[in-house]
Image (cartoon, rainbow, N blue to C red; front, side, top):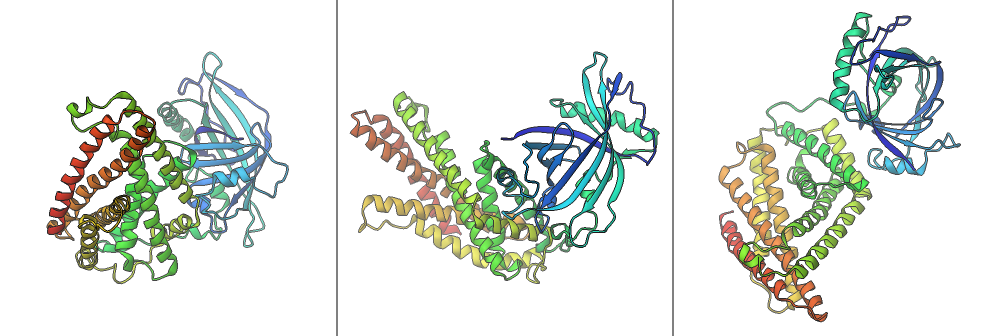
Length: 510
């Protein structure tokens, strides 16, 4: 079992033998309470590639002090960290399963090994207000860090630092105002905010860390520069959404789907920009898979919000409350299933392989000569591939039905084909957005966008009709009225027909 809290602290570098500043009168501090020194002994763990350090995450097993145990820290900034505590285990050489599970994405599924041992002699001073209530805690640390890799120096690295951490629950703005006031007092004794606020980062200085070996950005004015910039933003948002989904939080499913489609657009539409390796090929397939599963989740989210009500007040008034409640329950269950499918994908090897390729593309880009051309020239090649691809898929989606197959088979085929065309058109529009309107012809950008918009409405309507048909049948077999289902279905048929006509018109202009 673990507990999590927000840690807000600032670290100061203090000269060896230097005196601490007088903090009385700063930020409501009117009293101090000095504690006896104690020893801390912590071993930090990471992957062979140092994936955790690259993700600004630390994991350690620490003994001594009031919070001995396994700790995971995720840095939101230089001063704010989310800290998760796990109980101390007797086995110092094995990371607990619960800790490994909590770090699954950051470690990219890889095992952990000890990388640094840090011992600290800590002297704590409690900073109190006029009533004796604690405002913050000052820790004066004498630190010794010994790297544990094969190339580590024999002599530990030593330094002195001071950490000031606010009490739990304080407003972050209030905490930063306190730190700003403390800066002046520390400056008066020759100290200042630490250039490196993490003990681990200092202890790892000089270590052979592949994830920390970055490459220069591609040259300005090239398509490669725009691709790296977009992937950096997409990766960051994807990891934020992934963390929410994995923890059971309320992720924005539509944003998750948009990010996944964006990644698929960059890797797929601009495949010649990346090294011609099987790793990138598998990542492109994984991106398409992630786009598909998150798109279905986004559709399910839309149905929860949009299906229980008709598009006009007059029609909506004809839907009884029981029908509305049944539809809401059904769409919520469909959303729950879709979210479970997304989370299952996030636990799979293809997702981890995709993250590895994104890491390399963002941190150590190796642009090909194709990508080092101007955006306009690259756009011409992309248009030559994407335009006929989208046109063919849209044509299949809005083509004439095959009367030789059963009704349910035709409906399932229509939904699947429309989904593929919708994702393809949306992906193509996102691919064009990467290089911008200046690279692609505006008319093509607009027509692809129009096709994506009308297909969005069409695929929503087809999925809505599927839900209504299934649950109308259930209601009929149970002896319940089905009039409300018919009202909503008629509304959706109208929207689907309108979007069909618009899709055909958009197709003819692509």
